[in-house]
Length: 206
Image (cartoon, rainbow, N blue to C red; front, side):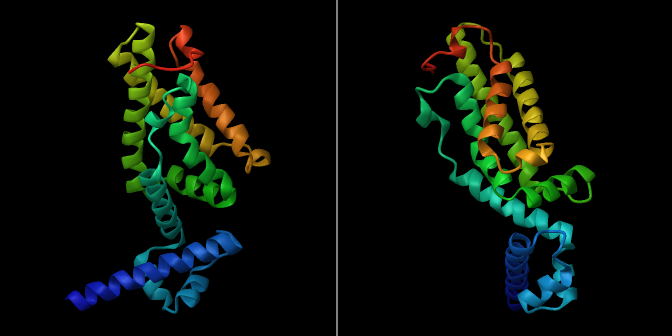
């Protein structure tokens, strides 16, 4: 049993590694399951047991997103940044990922939106990011003397959903423009902050 489990894990790793390399080199559309099987040195059946092409792309991106999330620097390291910038820092690594390989990012987003395949990592990250956004909004609101936990939770959800909308509908002509995406994200964050001096404050006190 242990041998079979080890073989299975090895096969999955080979398939995902081959899929990631081919997607990055030839693009999602031009890569076939047969190509992945050949690159992995496995049969088409073995590749399909791991997942179809859509599922493989979701797995590849999920792994990248999970690694980025675990490696993100804490926003608390940016104590002197204005509120909107602190909120934008939460999204920066993901914006960089999505603009680094826009064609793959669009394919990944399309698969998730279609509901063909779900993403456990993406779902878990949604809850984490929403909580982080709410915490930053709370810090800013308390500095302004207008803290409202219920309102911050609503604003956090709105910011998260708008963030997804920006990522998933970013204009093709701006695909690789990380700076433009981050500027849009910061403007989005700014629009949800309470109207007070903390919008432009040099720091936010805990």
